[in-house]
Length: 322
Image 1 (tube, rainbow, N blue to C red):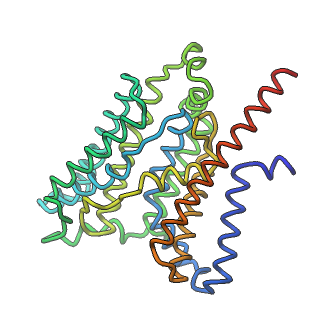
Image 2: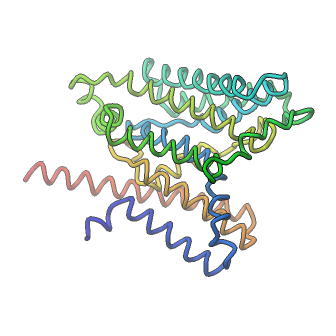
Image 3: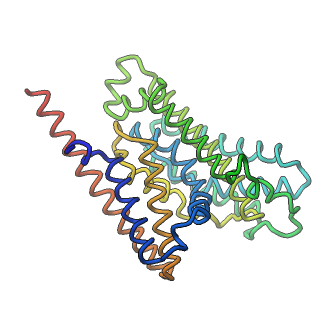
């Protein structure tokens, strides 16, 4: 029982349930409704989808700070393609390809040329944002926009909002990758000890490169989702998206230094942040107070993450000496 209580997934699920109980009591019946939970899921769908892949990346000890800018950039590309008369599917493919290309650049810099992920992805964050602003002439791409751009966001599938369906698909894919594929196992091995993984025959550079490309593609797809939801391309949007992704991953129990993580934990981490924001909105808490609270949670999550990893390291050393 003690082991279960120390499990990161148990902790984040418990925190999620406590937040729900708190807002059910304070915000009333309006919070505890199926429509509200669907609203929360739709609002956080892009974060969950990108964070599912980014969890696998963080298991290797790497991360991506460019995701928010890539989502914004791809969304602007998608909006411009639709505005020029291109059909929805080809325009979506172009946006995803844009994301993949940025993932290729990130992966090449980090995996091939050994750039620190902070420097490499920070550079791409600024470059992507700058190109998006140039494409959009510094303004939201909304004028003369065909109404069909919003078709994706308004669709349902089997009675579920399409964004919720996308979440389910992403979770199924990345939980399978984490638990059942060599990519997931190698990611954990690289995060645990990169040199040992390399000398055991794992192509560490190829694994890291592939994960960056996957994240880029998903960020491109998230750009399509964003443009569809807004019926516009916003070059200034998604500021802070990358930190919401990282916060969800850390809250879910993935180690910043790699070697440990959980896609399901990330899902609940994202839900905690989303439900917290939703509940505070219902209580009419101002946005700047919400930002301060999110920053405090981020700091506490990092401190807790480091404490848990130190305890695990001590136990590993003690077990090795025994």
